Picture 1 (tube, protein in one colour):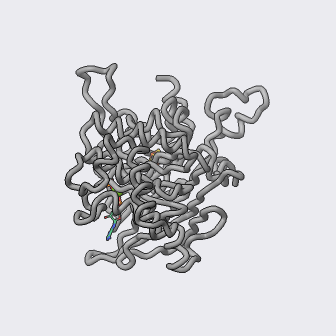
Picture 2 (cartoon, rainbow, N blue to C red):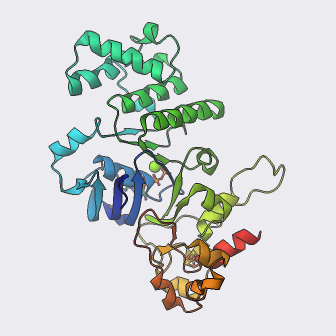
Picture 3 (tube, rainbow, N blue to C red):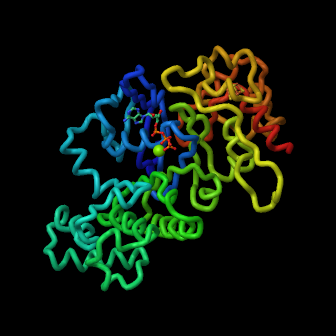
Length: 365
Ligand SMILES: Nc1ncnc2c1ncn2[C@@H]1O[C@H](COP(=O)(O)OP(=O)(O)OP(=O)(O)O)[C@@H](O)[C@H]1O
Ligand code: SF4
Ligand SMILES: [Mg+2]
């Protein structure tokens, strides 16, 4: 754990009891975020991105949800051991969340100035007048034009993009150390998406907050994120610095995601799509959960669940040949792979038995 480590999620398990049976939504999620860092969380619909975020924020639907294992260490304390009251005191001043849909998150019958000001009245004991002044300041901060004139307007009087800025302002109000943005721009059109993302990235740098950015869109995160965690069927399957992941993904699922982004330099070509569908979480496939869809699948994948392996640069590119380290790291003996099991949450890692081949192939093409 580094000194800067703000949040560590370790082996988090969540299930939901439904009419059809028990949905195993999270099956051992581990990731970390440092102060001032942006972690993008990617993965198809249903992979567990939002459930992880809700568990961190303490807003998971319980029941039907149940946390059955793991830890969420935030600023050195396991949030899962705190009382409801202690967690409420953390939400707002220490961590805040931005949701996709501002219209349903804001109260339609209260002015935005009132709602923004409420943060200061409730948490900082500000007077009505002070609170309104702070609300205007915040609206200016998130670049809402004519903030002074608009502070008494209601949510529906703003455009989608402006409402999303107001959500960002609400999250920033008490200058939290961690912000979780769950698909903050999905409901907006493309140009507005880019503006809102730029704003969020600027504010994140300015306030030096940790940011967890949940998105479907690999294109959006390229300029924004420091690291990426890729989720599949309630697990992290790859965790890597953005540049390394883009240069050479270490998991076939990540490669599939990268290959399915539309690129400006590839006009007209067929877009790759990962074959098959995400698994049904009532019956997650045995072995590697990705095996029914994986172009690299081998016998072992059908029976052995891959742990998160440490992905070492040297092992992958052969740079350590002279030291002899490579021989061990690329041993054909699968048991050797266990040696590489990753203990550190910040390290580059992949939950694929054949990550080395995946990286090497990506480098060659
Ligand atoms: N309240 C709930 N009751 C039952 N199942 C739930 C509940 N909330 C989430 N789930 C299940 O947990 C799994 C993970 O859901 P989650 O919302 O985290 O996916 P996601 O990765 O955020 O997907 P999306 O990209 O569509 O937002 C899904 O299978 C979902 O059906
Ligand atoms: S472990 Fe096997 S099935 Fe899973 S991603 Fe790797 S190669 Fe594919
Ligand atoms: Mg979601």
